[in-house]
Image (spheres, rainbow, N blue to C red):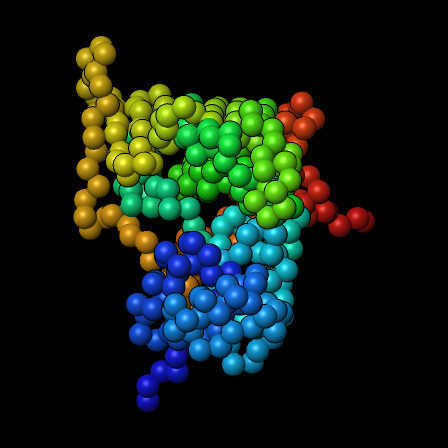
Length: 364
Protein backbone atom coordinates (compact mmCIF):
# COMPACT_ATOMS: atom_id res chain seq x y z
CA UNK A 1 0.00 0.00 0.00
CA UNK A 2 1.10 3.55 -0.70
CA UNK A 3 2.45 5.39 2.31
CA UNK A 4 0.20 8.08 3.72
CA UNK A 5 1.52 11.53 2.95
CA UNK A 6 2.94 13.66 5.74
CA UNK A 7 0.60 16.63 6.21
CA UNK A 8 2.46 19.80 7.15
CA UNK A 9 1.17 23.17 8.35
CA UNK A 10 3.24 26.33 7.97
CA UNK A 11 3.24 29.12 10.54
CA UNK A 12 4.99 32.24 9.28
CA UNK A 13 5.59 32.00 5.53
CA UNK A 14 8.33 34.61 5.42
CA UNK A 15 11.49 34.94 3.39
CA UNK A 16 13.36 31.84 4.50
CA UNK A 17 10.21 29.73 4.39
CA UNK A 18 9.60 30.78 0.78
CA UNK A 19 13.23 30.53 -0.29
CA UNK A 20 14.16 27.24 1.37
CA UNK A 21 11.50 25.33 3.27
CA UNK A 22 8.57 25.44 0.87
CA UNK A 23 10.68 24.38 -2.15
CA UNK A 24 12.47 21.78 -0.02
CA UNK A 25 9.20 20.30 1.22
CA UNK A 26 7.57 20.47 -2.22
CA UNK A 27 10.43 18.37 -3.59
CA UNK A 28 9.51 15.46 -1.30
CA UNK A 29 7.03 13.01 -2.79
CA UNK A 30 5.59 11.93 0.56
CA UNK A 31 4.81 15.44 1.88
CA UNK A 32 1.76 17.67 1.45
CA UNK A 33 1.63 21.33 2.47
CA UNK A 34 -1.94 21.53 3.71
CA UNK A 35 -2.27 24.74 5.73
CA UNK A 36 -0.68 28.14 6.37
CA UNK A 37 -1.02 30.96 8.89
CA UNK A 38 0.79 34.32 8.77
CA UNK A 39 0.60 37.36 11.05
CA UNK A 40 -2.11 38.98 8.94
CA UNK A 41 -5.04 37.39 7.07
CA UNK A 42 -4.13 39.18 3.83
CA UNK A 43 -0.59 37.81 3.98
CA UNK A 44 -1.92 34.35 4.81
CA UNK A 45 -4.21 34.34 1.79
CA UNK A 46 -1.44 35.62 -0.48
CA UNK A 47 0.92 32.85 0.67
CA UNK A 48 -1.78 30.22 0.13
CA UNK A 49 -2.45 31.45 -3.42
CA UNK A 50 1.23 31.73 -4.30
CA UNK A 51 2.10 28.23 -3.12
CA UNK A 52 -1.14 26.38 -3.76
CA UNK A 53 -1.80 25.65 -0.08
CA UNK A 54 -5.47 24.63 0.32
CA UNK A 55 -6.28 25.77 3.87
CA UNK A 56 -5.69 29.02 5.75
CA UNK A 57 -5.97 29.94 9.43
CA UNK A 58 -6.22 33.36 11.05
CA UNK A 59 -4.82 32.10 14.37
CA UNK A 60 -1.78 29.89 14.69
CA UNK A 61 -3.37 28.22 17.71
CA UNK A 62 -6.15 26.85 15.49
CA UNK A 63 -3.71 25.52 12.93
CA UNK A 64 -1.69 23.76 15.64
CA UNK A 65 -4.84 22.19 17.11
CA UNK A 66 -6.10 20.83 13.79
CA UNK A 67 -6.14 16.99 13.95
CA UNK A 68 -5.60 16.71 10.17
CA UNK A 69 -2.07 18.13 10.43
CA UNK A 70 0.87 15.89 11.33
CA UNK A 71 3.77 18.35 11.60
CA UNK A 72 4.40 22.08 11.99
CA UNK A 73 7.12 24.17 10.35
CA UNK A 74 7.64 27.45 12.22
CA UNK A 75 8.98 30.33 10.15
CA UNK A 76 8.04 33.17 12.49
CA UNK A 77 10.35 35.56 14.30
CA UNK A 78 11.89 34.09 17.50
CA UNK A 79 9.23 35.49 19.86
CA UNK A 80 6.77 32.77 18.76
CA UNK A 81 9.12 29.81 18.48
CA UNK A 82 8.63 28.67 22.06
CA UNK A 83 4.84 29.02 22.42
CA UNK A 84 4.16 27.45 19.02
CA UNK A 85 6.55 24.58 19.72
CA UNK A 86 5.01 23.82 23.11
CA UNK A 87 1.47 23.91 21.72
CA UNK A 88 2.41 21.76 18.73
CA UNK A 89 4.03 19.07 20.86
CA UNK A 90 1.09 19.04 23.23
CA UNK A 91 -1.14 18.53 20.17
CA UNK A 92 0.94 15.54 19.06
CA UNK A 93 2.70 17.24 16.16
CA UNK A 94 6.31 17.09 15.01
CA UNK A 95 8.14 20.45 14.95
CA UNK A 96 10.72 22.07 12.70
CA UNK A 97 11.42 25.59 13.93
CA UNK A 98 13.38 28.31 12.24
CA UNK A 99 16.55 29.54 13.86
CA UNK A 100 17.15 31.38 16.07
CA UNK A 101 15.75 28.81 18.47
CA UNK A 102 14.03 31.14 20.96
CA UNK A 103 14.10 34.55 22.63
CA UNK A 104 16.38 33.40 25.42
CA UNK A 105 17.89 30.40 27.18
CA UNK A 106 14.88 29.90 29.48
CA UNK A 107 12.57 29.47 26.49
CA UNK A 108 15.04 27.15 24.79
CA UNK A 109 15.14 24.98 27.91
CA UNK A 110 11.35 24.86 28.02
CA UNK A 111 11.33 23.68 24.41
CA UNK A 112 13.92 20.99 25.14
CA UNK A 113 12.04 19.80 28.22
CA UNK A 114 8.84 19.52 26.17
CA UNK A 115 10.66 17.59 23.45
CA UNK A 116 11.88 15.12 26.07
CA UNK A 117 8.31 14.68 27.35
CA UNK A 118 7.27 13.62 23.85
CA UNK A 119 10.17 11.46 22.61
CA UNK A 120 8.06 9.94 19.80
CA UNK A 121 7.77 13.39 18.18
CA UNK A 122 10.57 14.83 16.05
CA UNK A 123 11.93 18.22 17.08
CA UNK A 124 14.43 20.08 14.94
CA UNK A 125 15.89 23.58 14.65
CA UNK A 126 16.77 24.87 11.20
CA UNK A 127 20.57 24.69 11.22
CA UNK A 128 23.20 27.28 10.56
CA UNK A 129 24.09 27.00 6.87
CA UNK A 130 27.62 28.14 7.66
CA UNK A 131 30.19 25.41 7.29
CA UNK A 132 27.75 22.69 6.23
CA UNK A 133 29.47 21.98 2.94
CA UNK A 134 32.86 21.30 4.50
CA UNK A 135 31.68 19.94 7.84
CA UNK A 136 32.89 16.36 7.28
CA UNK A 137 36.29 17.51 6.01
CA UNK A 138 36.78 19.84 8.97
CA UNK A 139 35.89 17.11 11.45
CA UNK A 140 38.26 14.64 9.79
CA UNK A 141 41.12 17.14 9.79
CA UNK A 142 40.66 18.07 13.44
CA UNK A 143 40.16 14.48 14.62
CA UNK A 144 43.16 13.41 12.54
CA UNK A 145 45.50 15.76 14.41
CA UNK A 146 45.93 18.42 11.72
CA UNK A 147 45.91 21.17 14.36
CA UNK A 148 47.62 19.29 17.18
CA UNK A 149 46.37 20.69 20.50
CA UNK A 150 43.96 23.58 19.96
CA UNK A 151 45.19 26.88 21.37
CA UNK A 152 43.42 29.82 19.74
CA UNK A 153 40.14 30.39 17.90
CA UNK A 154 39.10 33.44 15.92
CA UNK A 155 35.49 33.92 14.78
CA UNK A 156 34.61 36.94 12.67
CA UNK A 157 31.67 38.34 10.71
CA UNK A 158 32.16 41.87 9.45
CA UNK A 159 29.39 43.20 7.21
CA UNK A 160 27.73 46.43 6.09
CA UNK A 161 24.21 45.06 6.65
CA UNK A 162 23.40 47.76 9.23
CA UNK A 163 25.74 50.51 8.06
CA UNK A 164 23.00 52.65 6.52
CA UNK A 165 21.84 54.85 9.40
CA UNK A 166 18.68 55.79 7.49
CA UNK A 167 17.54 52.17 7.12
CA UNK A 168 14.40 51.34 9.13
CA UNK A 169 14.29 49.25 12.28
CA UNK A 170 14.30 45.54 11.48
CA UNK A 171 12.67 42.80 13.57
CA UNK A 172 16.18 41.56 14.34
CA UNK A 173 16.79 44.86 16.17
CA UNK A 174 13.61 44.62 18.24
CA UNK A 175 14.37 42.77 21.47
CA UNK A 176 10.67 41.91 21.96
CA UNK A 177 10.77 39.95 18.70
CA UNK A 178 14.35 38.65 18.64
CA UNK A 179 15.32 38.44 22.32
CA UNK A 180 19.00 38.06 23.15
CA UNK A 181 19.89 37.07 19.58
CA UNK A 182 22.39 39.49 18.11
CA UNK A 183 23.78 39.66 14.58
CA UNK A 184 24.91 36.15 13.51
CA UNK A 185 26.40 35.22 16.88
CA UNK A 186 24.12 32.24 17.50
CA UNK A 187 24.49 30.58 14.11
CA UNK A 188 28.25 31.10 14.09
CA UNK A 189 28.43 29.50 17.53
CA UNK A 190 26.31 26.60 16.31
CA UNK A 191 28.82 26.01 13.51
CA UNK A 192 31.72 26.15 15.96
CA UNK A 193 30.04 23.62 18.27
CA UNK A 194 30.16 21.05 15.46
CA UNK A 195 33.96 21.06 15.56
CA UNK A 196 35.17 22.24 18.96
CA UNK A 197 34.48 21.85 22.70
CA UNK A 198 31.93 24.30 24.11
CA UNK A 199 32.90 27.51 25.93
CA UNK A 200 32.94 27.51 29.72
CA UNK A 201 33.42 31.25 30.25
CA UNK A 202 32.74 34.41 28.26
CA UNK A 203 33.62 38.08 28.69
CA UNK A 204 31.88 40.41 26.27
CA UNK A 205 31.16 43.95 25.23
CA UNK A 206 28.45 45.05 22.82
CA UNK A 207 27.41 48.39 21.35
CA UNK A 208 24.86 49.97 19.03
CA UNK A 209 26.65 52.55 16.89
CA UNK A 210 23.27 53.43 15.39
CA UNK A 211 21.20 53.72 18.60
CA UNK A 212 17.82 54.64 17.09
CA UNK A 213 15.94 53.84 13.89
CA UNK A 214 12.51 54.54 12.44
CA UNK A 215 9.97 51.82 13.15
CA UNK A 216 8.39 51.17 9.70
CA UNK A 217 5.02 50.22 11.23
CA UNK A 218 4.55 53.20 13.53
CA UNK A 219 6.84 55.78 11.91
CA UNK A 220 8.28 56.48 15.36
CA UNK A 221 11.99 56.81 16.00
CA UNK A 222 12.73 53.95 18.42
CA UNK A 223 15.73 52.79 20.40
CA UNK A 224 17.47 49.84 18.77
CA UNK A 225 17.11 46.79 21.01
CA UNK A 226 20.08 44.73 19.84
CA UNK A 227 23.74 45.65 19.24
CA UNK A 228 25.35 46.15 15.86
CA UNK A 229 28.85 45.47 17.23
CA UNK A 230 29.86 42.50 19.41
CA UNK A 231 33.22 41.41 20.83
CA UNK A 232 33.68 38.29 22.96
CA UNK A 233 36.57 36.60 24.73
CA UNK A 234 35.91 32.97 25.63
CA UNK A 235 37.61 30.04 27.34
CA UNK A 236 36.75 26.67 25.82
CA UNK A 237 36.30 23.44 27.75
CA UNK A 238 39.73 22.17 26.66
CA UNK A 239 41.45 25.40 27.76
CA UNK A 240 41.74 26.97 24.31
CA UNK A 241 41.02 30.70 24.00
CA UNK A 242 38.56 32.17 21.52
CA UNK A 243 37.97 35.68 20.19
CA UNK A 244 34.77 36.71 18.43
CA UNK A 245 34.38 39.93 16.46
CA UNK A 246 31.04 40.67 14.82
CA UNK A 247 29.87 43.90 13.25
CA UNK A 248 27.05 44.97 10.98
CA UNK A 249 28.27 48.54 10.53
CA UNK A 250 31.42 48.14 8.43
CA UNK A 251 31.69 50.56 5.49
CA UNK A 252 32.38 47.51 3.30
CA UNK A 253 31.64 43.89 4.09
CA UNK A 254 34.77 41.96 5.03
CA UNK A 255 33.26 38.48 5.11
CA UNK A 256 32.89 35.81 7.77
CA UNK A 257 35.13 33.00 8.84
CA UNK A 258 36.52 30.76 11.56
CA UNK A 259 40.26 30.38 12.15
CA UNK A 260 41.65 27.61 14.34
CA UNK A 261 45.25 27.68 15.63
CA UNK A 262 46.87 24.65 17.22
CA UNK A 263 50.33 23.45 18.23
CA UNK A 264 50.86 21.83 14.82
CA UNK A 265 48.71 23.64 12.32
CA UNK A 266 46.19 26.26 11.27
CA UNK A 267 42.78 25.89 9.66
CA UNK A 268 40.72 28.69 8.18
CA UNK A 269 37.14 28.11 7.04
CA UNK A 270 35.98 30.93 4.76
CA UNK A 271 32.26 30.88 5.53
CA UNK A 272 31.31 33.14 2.64
CA UNK A 273 33.08 31.09 0.00
CA UNK A 274 32.70 27.65 1.66
CA UNK A 275 36.42 27.04 1.28
CA UNK A 276 38.93 25.55 3.70
CA UNK A 277 42.56 26.66 3.96
CA UNK A 278 45.28 25.22 6.15
CA UNK A 279 48.91 24.60 6.93
CA UNK A 280 50.36 21.91 9.20
CA UNK A 281 53.66 20.39 10.25
CA UNK A 282 52.13 17.20 11.63
CA UNK A 283 53.79 15.01 8.94
CA UNK A 284 57.22 15.99 10.19
CA UNK A 285 57.73 18.77 7.66
CA UNK A 286 58.22 22.35 8.73
CA UNK A 287 56.61 24.88 6.36
CA UNK A 288 58.94 27.62 5.18
CA UNK A 289 58.91 30.85 7.12
CA UNK A 290 56.11 33.06 5.80
CA UNK A 291 54.36 30.17 4.06
CA UNK A 292 50.75 30.90 3.15
CA UNK A 293 47.77 28.76 3.94
CA UNK A 294 46.88 26.42 1.10
CA UNK A 295 43.37 25.49 0.00
CA UNK A 296 42.21 22.07 1.17
CA UNK A 297 39.74 20.64 -1.34
CA UNK A 298 36.29 19.51 -0.25
CA UNK A 299 35.74 16.30 -2.27
CA UNK A 300 32.36 16.06 -3.93
CA UNK A 301 31.53 12.85 -2.08
CA UNK A 302 32.16 14.57 1.26
CA UNK A 303 30.47 17.90 0.51
CA UNK A 304 27.22 18.25 2.43
CA UNK A 305 24.23 19.96 0.86
CA UNK A 306 21.19 21.65 2.35
CA UNK A 307 18.65 18.91 3.00
CA UNK A 308 16.98 20.10 6.19
CA UNK A 309 13.44 19.46 5.01
CA UNK A 310 14.33 15.95 3.83
CA UNK A 311 16.04 15.20 7.15
CA UNK A 312 12.91 16.33 9.01
CA UNK A 313 10.68 14.06 6.94
CA UNK A 314 13.11 11.13 7.21
CA UNK A 315 13.26 11.50 10.99
CA UNK A 316 9.47 11.35 11.16
CA UNK A 317 9.16 8.43 8.72
CA UNK A 318 12.12 6.34 9.77
CA UNK A 319 13.05 7.46 13.26
CA UNK A 320 16.54 8.55 12.24
CA UNK A 321 18.02 11.00 14.75
CA UNK A 322 18.20 14.67 13.79
CA UNK A 323 21.76 15.85 13.21
CA UNK A 324 21.27 19.39 11.89
CA UNK A 325 20.11 20.63 14.39
CA UNK A 326 18.65 19.00 17.51
CA UNK A 327 17.13 20.94 20.41
CA UNK A 328 20.06 20.10 22.72
CA UNK A 329 22.46 21.94 20.39
CA UNK A 330 19.99 24.81 20.10
CA UNK A 331 19.97 25.17 23.88
CA UNK A 332 23.76 25.31 23.95
CA UNK A 333 24.02 28.17 21.47
CA UNK A 334 21.13 30.01 23.14
CA UNK A 335 22.92 29.78 26.51
CA UNK A 336 26.08 31.13 24.87
CA UNK A 337 24.20 34.05 23.30
CA UNK A 338 22.54 34.92 26.59
CA UNK A 339 25.86 34.63 28.46
CA UNK A 340 27.33 37.18 26.03
CA UNK A 341 24.43 39.55 26.70
CA UNK A 342 24.70 39.10 30.48
CA UNK A 343 28.46 39.66 30.44
CA UNK A 344 28.09 42.86 28.42
CA UNK A 345 25.36 44.14 30.77
CA UNK A 346 27.27 43.33 33.97
CA UNK A 347 30.79 44.09 32.80
CA UNK A 348 32.08 40.76 34.11
CA UNK A 349 32.80 37.23 32.95
CA UNK A 350 29.92 34.73 32.86
CA UNK A 351 30.35 30.99 33.36
CA UNK A 352 28.76 28.35 31.15
CA UNK A 353 26.58 26.34 31.32
CA UNK A 354 24.35 28.96 32.95
CA UNK A 355 24.00 28.01 36.59
CA UNK A 356 20.22 28.24 36.92
CA UNK A 357 19.69 25.67 34.19
CA UNK A 358 22.06 23.06 35.59
CA UNK A 359 20.40 19.95 37.11
CA UNK A 360 20.25 20.28 40.87
CA UNK A 361 21.65 17.44 42.96
CA UNK A 362 19.08 15.78 45.14
CA UNK A 363 19.35 16.62 48.83
CA UNK A 364 20.05 13.83 51.33
